[in-house]
Amino acid sequence: MNLAGLRIALVGPMPPPEGGMANQTRQLGELLRREGATVTVVAVNAAYRPSWMAKVRGIRAMFRLVPYVVRLWRVAGQADIFHVMANSGWSWHLFAAPAVWIARIRGIPSVVNYRGGEAETFLHRSGGVVLKTLRGASVLAVPSRFLQQVFGQCGVPSEVVPNIVDTERFRPADTMRPPGAPRLVVARNLEPIYDIATALRAFALVLENMPEARLIVAGSGPEREALQALAAELRIAAAVEFCGRLDRDQMAELYRSASVVINPSRIDNMPNSVLEAMASGAPVVSTDVGGVPFIVKDGVTGLLVAAGDHSAMAAAVLRVLGDAELAERLRAAALSEVQQYTWTRVRQRWTEVYASVLSGARVAVRTA
Image (cartoon, rainbow, N blue to C red; front, side, top):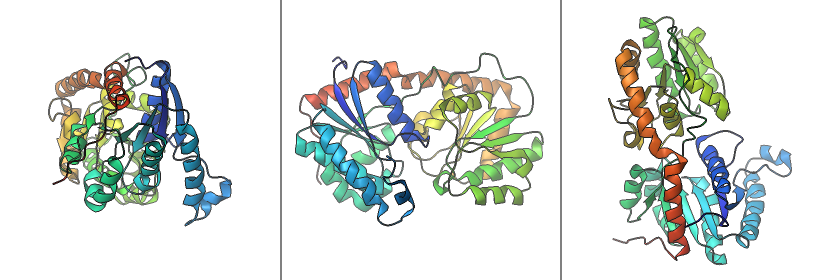
């Protein structure tokens, strides 16, 4: 199947702010256009009109939802396929579900590209409503075998189409990083599920062994003040930099400068930050939650530890920093592993999914 000329309505969040799902939406749109497809983006996080409505809690959702639904309806008249980037919680109910139903009403096939790391909890809580909507979709696509298993337990078949890593942007440094102060990086938003506090506690232990080490936390979120206070309490504030959210090029440079990238999350699916770190030649130490073990092989392409265990996390970081041979082995294996997430590989999977959708495929939700 040739993607050239295909008219795709791509529904999902767009930067700003920078973030995993928003970056994947933007990147997919850019790559599909490069293949000759006509891509119309329907942003679920479009700016409020008027702008002051963003400060009015309670009713502001309606000021975003109504224009969003109207735009979906109009775009449906100009699209061959709806590609819906879906997440858990209210994001599903307010944005993904309306897109699927409007596509169904307008006779447009739809791909639900579900990416939420909290899928298991969400399906347990709202499974009936979610499955009813999925019956109206053509294909459910998920980025990992982890999510495929989660949906499979609910009787929903899915196609695995991995996240895309831009290996032109996220690439190893041209020269090896010179010896010097170890530079640790955490690239997650400052939210409870990403458990930056455990990374700070682990770093405090690393500092006891390597006083010259530095930690850079790249991300924004509601826990910033609390995390800065924790850094002060742990007496590591002088060695920790909260640099805020960075754009794609800035993140690429940061990964290339890292001695180790730490992923401390408690819930995860297929974190772009981990894949991008691997593609940038940075050794990864991550928690073993959710879909992470499906992309990071412990002791082969990275080191995995239990969530919330700051002692184990510190020990893993020190192991990488203290063993140059191990660090290089992890780096080389990760660079090889991450090639399966390049556009050349993923393009073929999306081509197959779109072909099945246009042939009349439907999500066949199995009932017990």
